[in-house]
Length: 322
Ligand SMILES: C[S@@+](CC[C@H](N)C(=O)[O-])C[C@H]1O[C@@H](n2cnc3c(N)ncnc32)[C@H](O)[C@@H]1O
Image (tube, rainbow, N blue to C red; front, side, top):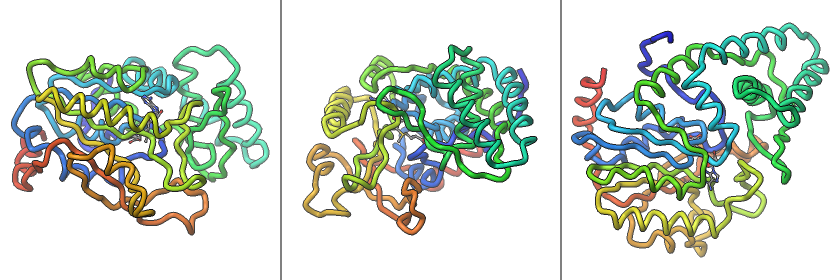
């Protein structure tokens, strides 16, 4: 295993819709202040690209245990491969990158992409090959989307990029080092199954970033796997959060779309999270394919606590973590 200084290097190895990279600073200001003075267990039930995960792993040393989960099996398999076999993954990705960049015409690149997509969907592949192809498709498909049709097949069209980075070796090794350092446990289940990760004796912090509730029937993307995350799922998640809140030693923070900013009569989240702290943060959403419709929107940040870390506490903490 190659050991690198992972400081600030580790970040999502895959582009993922709803990725929280842009929002990290605002999210950090809303973390529970207890994370800065107690050991804790970190749980992320909808990990996606893991922007928050890699941020937490890089900035806190007082983590006892980490459990991540996502219902997308191809994604969780890629996390396992990054944790256990980063060298094999880098080797394969470099090979694919070389093949792809040697192709000079767009039509031929598109054919190469479609053949990789066919293999990904139809062939029985080792987890290493499958994860390498997943990352390749993610880097070369339209807008870096991951979307499946109703049969569960990846169906994103080819994207036009002159020189995509297909193998980001530094990021893969930095992510791998952190996943091993904290021996991150990787689950591929429904979010409710992460209840088993609660630490019965100490603090557990959950960060939830579920598929967002669409702001309108046509505007949003929330199909990461063949089944939609509909309003009943959002309600189940709110019930799950209430159950966690009753445990007493669990803090949670949850992101979602700000439906009432768009339509003041739509108080869906205010209703299902009544009694919890609801903040608004600014985010530039990149999901809309039409660039003119992308822009600054508010997002909700819902928490079962109200404490915020003081600026000095955060700064001192980082000095210790360095
Ligand atoms: C908004 S994304 C998470 C984005 C992520 N936090 C990031 O930074 O990239 C939502 C994730 O929830 C996953 N998901 C959807 N339904 C789920 C379920 N029932 N249980 C667990 N994960 C689910 C999707 O596969 C997707 O990766």
